[in-house]
Each structure stands twice: as C-alpha cells, then as structure tokens.
Length: 213
Length: 194
Image (cartoon, rainbow over all chains, first blue to last red; front, side, top):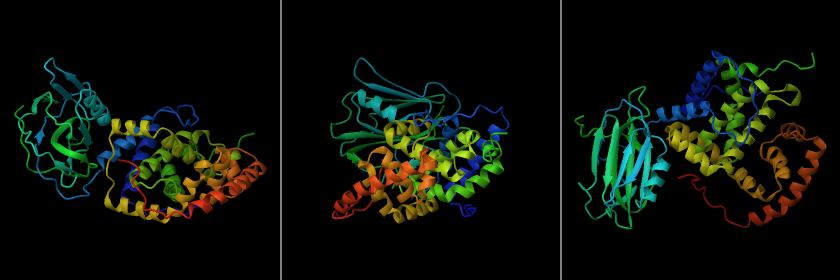
C-alpha cells in the first residue's frame, strides 16, 4: 500500500475539502447507478463545483495593481450571462450580468470587430496591469461609456474606437462576499498597443469609484 | 457469492473513506500528472479531474480486475487523454465555469518542483507520441509510471503476453526515436496554456 500523505500543499488541501464536500453531498442523496467514465463525457456537476472552488480559493501572487478605471457594481440578481449587440450607427454595446464564458465574450466582441482580451476573476482580484501590455498612446478615456442597472453592467464601444493595433483589455471581477461569486462586482478596462500578456491576478485596489445605484 | 465486495464503494459516499483514499493515492497522481504536463495550473486541474472521476467510478470498481492503484492509473489516463484531445473545448468549459485561477505560491512552487524533476520523463512522454496507441499505452505505464507489465496489462484490460509484445515493439521503435531526440538541445519548458 502507498503511505498516507499528510503533507498537502494549499491546493491539495483545498481540493481534499472540496472532494469531501462533494462526497458528503452524494452520501446524503440517493445513490445513482455506477456509470462508466467516458473520455468524451461532458464535465460533471462535481467538476464544476470543484473548479468553482478553485476560483474562490484564489489568493494574491503579485503586488497590488494600479487603479485604472474601476467601477463597483451592486451584486444581487441573475439573468443571461452577457450580450453583445451592434447599433445601427456601428457602436457595440455589451451587457454583462454574470461572469461566465470570458472566451465567449471575447469571441463575440471579435465578431463585432472589437479586438479584446477578457478575463474573469474571483472576488477581490484584478489583473495586474504593470508589464502586461503597453498602454495605447492615444487617449481613449471617456469615450467608452459605462452604465449600471441593478446587477447588470453595460458598456458601449464607439465605432472605430480602437486602432487596428489596439486591443481592449477587460477585467471583470466577482464579489468577494460569500454567495456572490457569479455576479459582476467590478470592472477594469484599458487599451493596449500590441500584444497583451496573461492576466496576473492581484488584490483588488482600494481606490474605487462607488456607483450610485 | 461470485463478486468480492467493492473496497472502493465507500469513497463515493463517505468523506472519511474518500480522504483516506485521497491521501493514500495522491503521490501516484502527483507523479502521473507531472510526467505529462508542464504547467502547474493544468496539473492542478488534472489532479482535480482525476479524483472526481475516481469518485464517479468508484461504485463500479471491480477488485477482480486489478488493484485500486492500477484502476486509478486507468482513470488518470482517461483524464489526460480527455484534456489532450479536447484541450480547446476543455479550456472553454473551464472559462465558462470559473476561468483559470492562480494557485497559491506554495502550491505553484511544489508543483513546479515536481514538474522540473520529471522533465526527462516528459521528454520521453512526448517522444512516445509517434507510437501506435496500443504500444504507447503499455510503454507509458511501464517506462514512465513504473508499473509492472502485469499491472499495466490490468490497467489496459489486455493479457500480460500482449502487453509484453507491445512493450517490446514500442521499445524497439522508440530506441531509434530517442537517439535522434537527444541530439537536440533541450530547451526550458514552455507554458502550455495562456
């Protein structure tokens, strides 16, 4: 037999707790029939659960980010995760209700001609901006309009707002409060010139602009 | 009774049994993953996938078809194959659920240590990619994971004789491939995921 491992790192300890929770949940429910593991099977509820836990367990690995354009958003509520639409004048409007499918949102923006890098982060975290990308030299501030209704965050990108070499960098964060890990809590955006590096999560900056409603 | 009791049935419903199984088999999974992927985040995801799949499959474990460790190797192979085959799809699924999240520093450090230590094994693993699937499966388990031929045969559900034949062919093939490979300077591991 293999020796029992007592020395767990933080991930392994967290995973163990998640697995225990998962098993406890199953143990309290009627047993389902054993099923064969299929390599092409879709993710189980359990795997989603554990991956979700990994997001909650995230901690800082870098220094605090600089405060960019941060807006906090009231959290309660649920509806479609996001929507991207173009108006007749060529502007693109994005509405985000829940932080699901960052890649999908990124692809949807690209379909509307917007080069973007989208990251969703767990509560209290933002992407560290330093060294991640070169800020575009032209000033885009104030041109991207943002509005908040309930838990829904909407922003509008004017037609031809980005030069061909520029990328809109969007970071959306969930609430650090327990039970509110799906809804949009804060948003940061910037415009990059050239390539954009991988998001390096850092603690949420203390300088924020409180939304009115 | 024709069927012996299933010693793993309890890990699907009893948290203490699950913890015991987890602690007992974590070294196997750590090594298995580190010999195949070079990215700590991906390694963490695979580790979670493997144990979740084990919990799913535990009620169907048949002790007559091999040890729990061998059974777990089979599950781990499925998890890695799934990740490799549908990497883009899996990444989308991950993003949809929660996105890639950072591990804490201690977990990254330890995962990276294991990954660095298994650099040679991963070179071998990559070199195996040219092999037919059946030969590769046996060679992986024997040469990479250190299983006995009989254990590898159990994992794959084939006879030990068949496993030996595949192993011999794989080694013959791979001997030439590795000779070529070692003439190329080995570069530092790249980050697999973005």
